[in-house]
View 1 (spheres, helix red, strand yellow):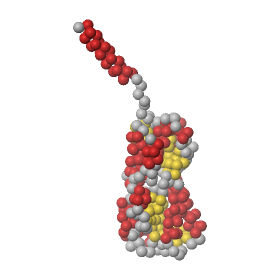
View 2: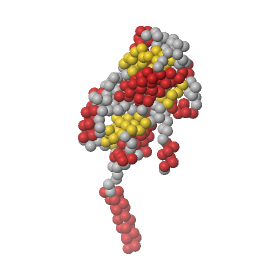
View 3: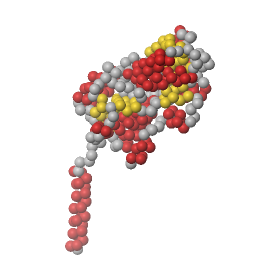
View 4: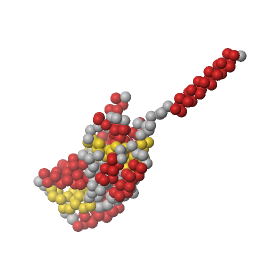
Length: 331
């Protein structure tokens, strides 16, 4: 009897100890990361979100994703930055609508102790620990060279750009303009700025092409403007006498490649931007910030009808993380 009582008492004490230890031991805190983007609706950003969520799962992070309804609304972005700080975010992964007008809000977040990672589009703050995205100047040159290598004779170029305060769009225009000037056989007829909205871009591109019928090369520098411009080429039936280069992967522009009213796409890797942005936030928060590079250039390539159905072309067009194999080898 005594032995039974003793064993029961020991079992009770062991259970109490286990429960108490579980209650009192401080579990590692989950870091909170806020991803604030320029939009939440385009295929580009949906791919970036998939990458960000994969990284958050891998590193056991609390991830929130927000963004304004239009890619011109930097004021809403600034409000979202403040809300993320108030909610206790440990890090913000940010794509700026306006290089200058978003800077003060990012500076304030950093002053509150929040780590800052920039993806896709830079912001004018020296508090950014790393930038992850396309080399946008080089991407603009890539778009120009795609036309120069495929179109014979003189080039008369029309450019459809977006928000003038957004760093990546301006860098792409500059890269394209420099490459065209260096060629000695191209001139820019006009550069227009439209809303980051496919229907508006279509309307404005139609007006551009009607005003300048001499344009034989058209370039658009992000996903919505590329969709709208491609639709303008189709509406005006200009696919036979106009070479169109767009940006990013969208079902409309991919169909255009197959059907002939899109000639080439400069395809970025938003999945990698989202993944590496969140992974970099984790490294900063876990004391590994010294391993980060100030700039990480994610992969960008030209897709046209020649490589559309190749393995490399398909990987570029659809969500793919080019760094996964390297991480698998390290595990």
